Image (cartoon, rainbow, N blue to C red; front, side, top):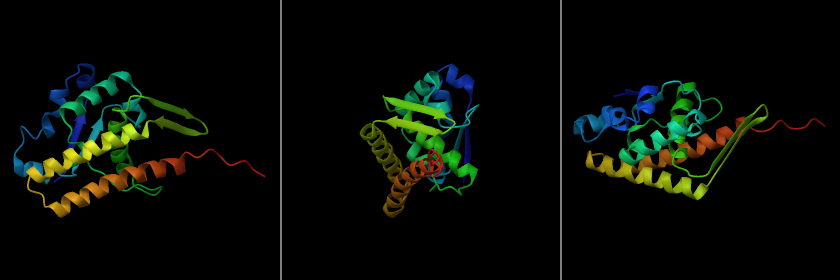
Length: 181
């Protein structure tokens, strides 16, 4: 089962986190539906074309930080994929959204985009802490919805590998040009 989850600018501007979360809130959807939505939700945000549109915009960043506080289930519901330079655009967008949600939780973040590439600096320990929390909450919900332990471990490994692959792919694509001899 796949589900599209679209968050509008109006929800963000109004700070309506509860309204945004409602379509994928474990408290309001049936357990069978929760089971079917494991790793199947495609999150998109109106007018977002790159991860920085989420984590670099103060209003959007605050919204998604609060969203995570109220809905820490991104690791369970959201689609994640291993990324490389040949990955389909849709997979890259899925992972960009996933990573951007994590970066919204990091306190000190530097993002610079230029003609020669992108630079992103953040506290790796804080990022890891938030990623670990996301994985833990995903495993809890998976267990409650009846997913087998082996599948929970596989999903957890996929999350870690997909996040690492996203950064690796980003680094390879955003390398400064090499000087010509």
